[in-house]
Amino acid sequence: MTDSILARLSSVPALRRGARQTKLLWKRVFFAPLHALRKPRLRAFGLEPHSAPPIAPLRLAKGCPCEEGAHYCALSWGAMKDFARPSDRSRIRRALKQTAAAIGLDPYASFEAWRVQVSRLTQGKYHRSANKARRLGYASRFVGLDSYARSVHELTGSKPRRSKGLFVWAALAGPRSDLIDTKEPPWRTPCPLHGRATWGAFRTDATGETLVAFAMLVRSGDLMWVQNFIGHGAALTDGVTKMLMFDIMAWLLARSDPLTVGVRALVHGSVEEGGVGLFDWKRYLGFRPVLLDIGDAP
Ligand SMILES: [Zn+2]
Image (tube, rainbow, N blue to C red; front, side, top):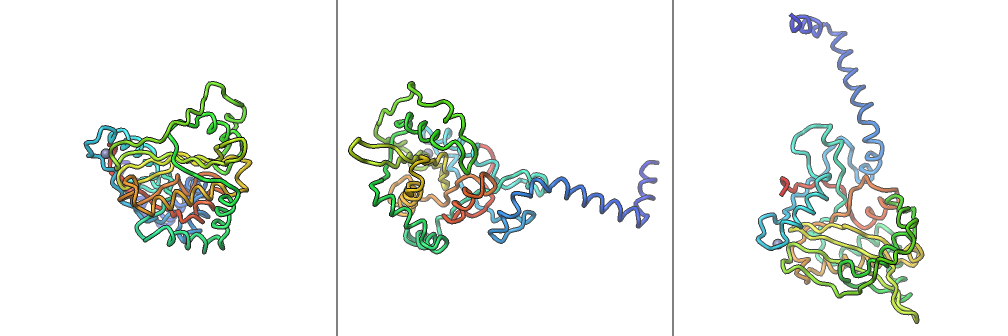
């Protein structure tokens, strides 16, 4: 009975038009806040918020028999699942997904090819900035995991307001006497497909070495992703974060370290996260919006 009434009502053109318009209006109202930030950011890459960004199929090497493979697969899948392609065509699921910011490494034959592109996008500004840091005596290298815990805490609190958001807790906590810089040398997991690389950038002067920027990268199969990347507030204008990023890209694109061989993409969060400063930083460095195809949960 109810069905036949609905069928009769839906055959009235005016009602049908009204229902269609209500549906469209509801969709616009519902999706407006979700698309408000995404729209200008995707448009900067010639994409519309409703259109599907390119899909990047990446294997996390889930079946690897190495001891820590399961841990790194689970860690990476958990960090990337919000940027994964929805398994259906639901607009709501797509709207709730963020879009990964990724550099596909395959097109770059060398670090120099990537650097030239960055220099074109920044009119050489980032390159000059990285060189300025080197001239001022900064240098970066691998460091042991958690081997600069106190310095990392200090540099996190050195600038409470960053493009990624507020880091007030570290600033309020002040120096932490329970944290120590053990300065242990870096170590690697035996399997190059699953592991971590921790980088530190240092200033060296008469008083010794000071950590001024820090980065942590995780590898799982084809994927390398940035787990942490932060610079000291007082050293940012010296170009230390640009220098560190250039050093990381030189390491990745040299493809000589086993931990980098076969890596196909570097992912640094999403294009939606953080302020305009972080978005522009990623855009200038060659990060592009993609949805990841990383399969089911490991
Ligand atoms: Zn492995």
